[in-house]
Length: 73
Length: 73
Length: 148
Length: 148
Image 1 (cartoon, rainbow over the protein chains, first blue to last red):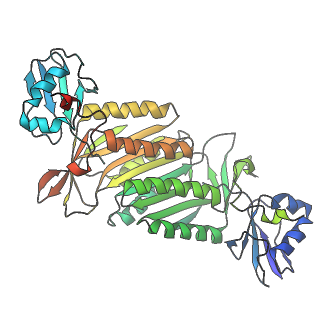
Image 2: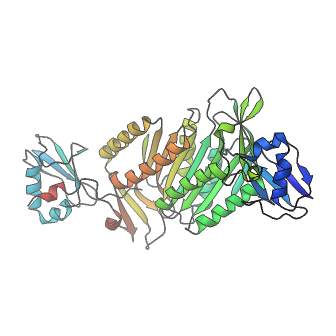
Image 3: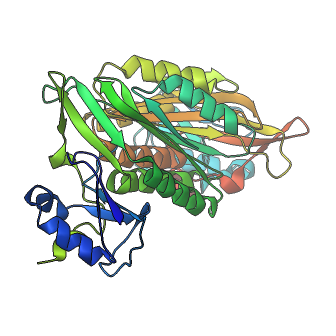
């Protein structure tokens, strides 16, 4: 099981799922209409490191974070 | 009579001379070996406004200032 | 030196402390950037969410980068609500030379705006509204949206 | 707002006062630049001469220029001797937007170095030595040297 966290303005509780890569996570989240709208503009971190490939392998216990567009300052 | 002031590190008392243009001032100062060494690197102000032409006319009572290279801060 | 505060920053106190802490360390230039909430668009203030683990990593990577140039960065940011004319953000660079400091404060503040995991909300009638139009997708965003 | 002081600047006090004086004026960005005397080349400190009439005109022209962009500049500088690790110079920009403020503080500080009628001396064993090698001729210099 991996854990998915939605940060900032995404009004969604975190959830857990079975996944061996980000590809699996992408497919699962795309089926949720509410989340799907955010996917185009969100960055993704695995265990608090930003990642850039869907092939990123996942292990049980990993934390995946979705980071929507930012505006600090 | 115009008054010539030497600013900052130029160790020279101010002086007065007859002059109707900066050309006259340039010629007079060039004959002073101590001052001549500064002329190539000094900016010139007439009555506290920087000027860029030797043809600048002068009137009696004008103040001419020589500003050597600067380094504020 | 990354400092997070609940609500508005005490700007004079933070600047005094940062300046004092480096005063004997032979930096010739100190440039703080202070961000203040403007009275605009009928807001009562702004509110901020911060995801601290990634902010700390982002900040640490900057500290390493500027250290290679003999410089130092500091940053303070507010969490939660900050009223109009109060300050939410201070960044600062210390370096030996002015040119390095001027270049780094610009690069740091711009990358902060583009990359730091902080979300801004307008406060209107006590409610938070995500400042979506003023927000920037972090570089590499959209990864999970590439799947059909 | 051009302030000249005998000897070193009280940085926290000046920053506190400048920040406070503009806090309600809806500027979103405040960027001070603080210059501090470095311990280098065996100096005991630096010393400064200022020609105030031309400095005031130079500063006033900058104030007019930044005002056209909705911004504000302030500056403080030391006259006379300033010791190692003490501050001799503060410049600051206030503006609505960060991009304007970042661009203006850079341009202001660089033009200050190139144009402000201030002369710097190294202090060694109580004597002043003109910092000739670090000094810059003001634009248009050499006018009187063009005569044969």
